[in-house]
Length: 190
Image (cartoon, rainbow, N blue to C red):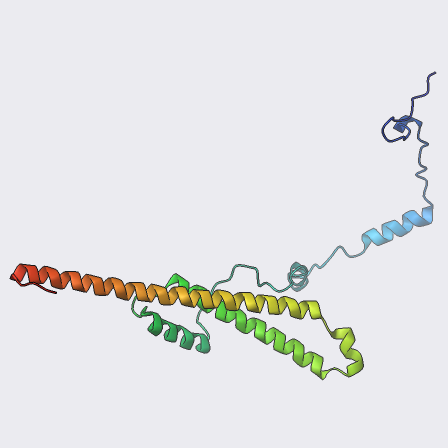
């Protein structure tokens, strides 16, 4: 009988020549495996399942969000001020307005988290501070706050530009209408 040669590339022996691994386990090990297999397989109550569903949740700032209905009073005030500035009153809520308001809301949430984290750190004894300090978490929150502030400011600029363009368009339309009326009446409008 010819022995199979070792693999030229890896230098390993072929499967046929490897010694069989013993699958003999002790009865105690099998009994322990059965006991462990009979134990809990995870939460069974609705509350436990809901809690376990959020195990991988970190902060939720990347997820798609919508504005809550009704808006918080402080956000309604901001919406009214922006509407007056952008001349959007009476046209319904502009899509850019929703983005700006949502960024205001997210910035508020991040500020609350940062303030809560700092308050918690300040309440600790100095010896516990090092154990509870999470600079990476604070840096992540600061990154998102900066990002949402940039989006908010860009959105406000776009909203203001939209209001400006609408006013310019309305002004041009008014001028054209006046010129048409002047032509009909035989007058020249400068």
